[in-house]
Length: 135
Image (cartoon, rainbow, N blue to C red; front, side, top):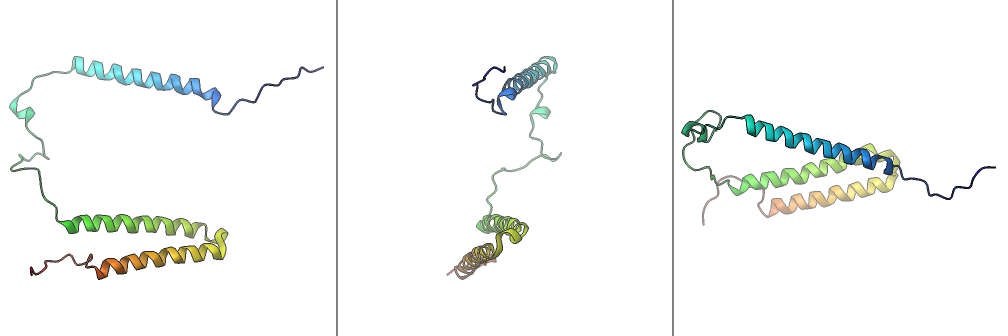
């Protein structure tokens, strides 16, 4: 006769909790030991040459605060928008057979909305980045 066990089955994550906790503690301890040893054994001889800002071997002149023009940021934002659009279209292209006609209509609507957005930006002058006459 077999004993009746009413215990709920363990989730697949429970056996790994101890292992992952132990691993995390060991990694943290190793990093702390290595940082302590490197700071303890390392030489500390500051000099004006060592304290100088290093910029690819060139002695920096002037301020590091440069003002970027607005079109620079517009290009970055447009790139991000159309890069995300490309990711959505590529993922749709991979699953297009499974999605059928409803998926085709949805991606067509998605592209239509993006084209409307591009036309809106174009009409508002967001794509004109050259020098403009001051009025």
